[in-house]
Image (spheres, rainbow, N blue to C red):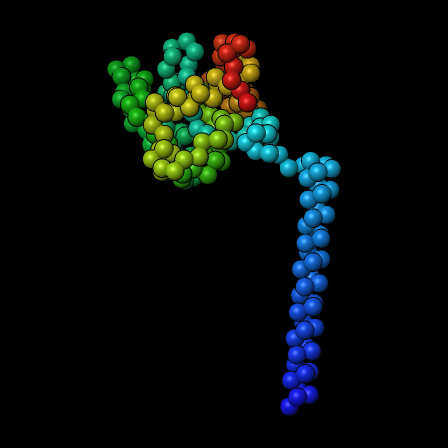
Length: 205
């Protein structure tokens, strides 16, 4: 019995030694990675103090483009965005005038259902909608992700106020690979939107 107990104790000690050796090896690997990657190469960005530059065309926070001439949304209530949306998260109500044109009464987006495919932006004939390059809009309340028309226009104002440029054009307003001649007139004639940028007032970054 003593011999058997001694053998069991020996095996247990051996297994424990293996575990300890493996743990030390993993720790050494982690420390090596931290030293070479973090200290020597400096790959990790110290967010939010250091932020990665956002690439053009990044699909972020939703916004309705404010027409610089009228101060209102550009939407013509064609319903194409709501129709093409795969998650059906866009809700639009409108009233029709005597001349057949439509006036937006309600434009709402349920952002938490959105899959950020960008179809709504691509299909809009007048470039009235955009998935901005803004991505910092987390919140503790679900209600804050239900964007009505006023909030969508506010999103546009806040986004453009932080841009260090006097004009803005989203790449999905005129998708690559499609002949411009086949696009709606609104897309063909759309020019970069003037923002009235003043470098002394910009708070970007």
